[in-house]
Length: 327
Length: 253
Image (cartoon, rainbow over all chains, first blue to last red; front, top):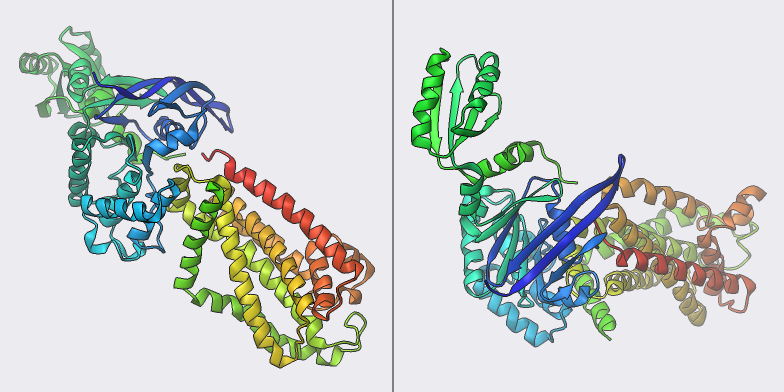
């Protein structure tokens, strides 16, 4: 494969909390290669943001190493800073200034002369379609416009690798699709992209490879296809009458069969992970018949990344995010 | 070199912000003007009270007001800092090779220039009310005011960066604000105070600034109180800026 632009070895970061020392990142190993879009997934509080903050030199790890764009983030933070772009969840565009002023200042802070910075700003204004509003005060921007400026700011220094932290959170579907297009365009122009997300469909649509983090550990890594095949196989989802009463016994029975390799239950639906969905579905129906359980719905689906997550961690990414809180 | 350039760039950024909304300068000018118009007349019968001296009333009163201006314009910048933490601007700068010291100094410099604009504007307004400017003394007094705002602005900015939340910074700033103002003798001279209150005032740096300001405004430069003010304020400024710089160099989680 291509050249490595990011390499993390045995990364550990502790935080002090009321209950003592917490390992927010607990032995993470990762490698990202030049030119790819790498997805970093996980629920809030899993260690995703902490890892990202170490990679972008905002935090220092307690042990392990992180080499980004050829430099150690702990020993040579300024060298790393010169070579990365970072778009935080909050964005980072400065409200009281115009888009263009934001861009030029960003360039100057990287050491560019005013004219070089203005030239680069102009390129990015075209690349990210900011022409219409580049000279307006940022406070007047819509969510989508602001997001594009945020991304442009991250690109001012022609970074070797661009970090995007939850880039589409809070965007409407149209703006999300728009940003996806922009991100793909950046990749085609040779930018390596490291993005965190908790939208699995986003990771599926954009990323060549991805890693899933939970409780500070990487629990799965590979291409979206590999992950789907490896963990889950096909997924049969059933819901039954009198679910609360009958489900526990049924699940026990299903777990004893040899064609079902995992069962997940979330109060209304039972998910069965099987190798071959088509033959398994008739066997499942037989069992339900024998047990005289009335079926409400049954669906067979190819596994999504959500299934992968559920399979690897035992909890659904969506459930966690619904109640999740970022520290 | 890089640090100086960064300070210049970040100062320009904040200054542009001020000049785009000059209304804030007007609002900040309003506080001393209101004191001048609505409070100063109360003092007119007190000219021979101890502590006021026998000199010009306005020359005793205005320096206190200017200390308020410098103090308040710096202290409450913490809110603006929190704003910029929230919108991610600070984090964005921190991922560039920008000097951490410049991130602080650019802001403090803007606040200082802002304060000087307000102070000099106000002085112009106060002259018709009877404020007599002794040039050298007045210039030295502006140095004192600069040290005050450098201290409070560094403190406010660093506190904003640590706390990141208006609701947490508010009680701290308010808790500092009122005692410092009351114990500075800026409205009425501390000579009028009972002994214990007077002692308390002596641990307040703003008190020394006000005392020195009154002397300097009347052209008295070679005076122990002026020396004390410069000494204490220099120490305070160095300590606060050092601490704030360390906060800006720290990791942010």
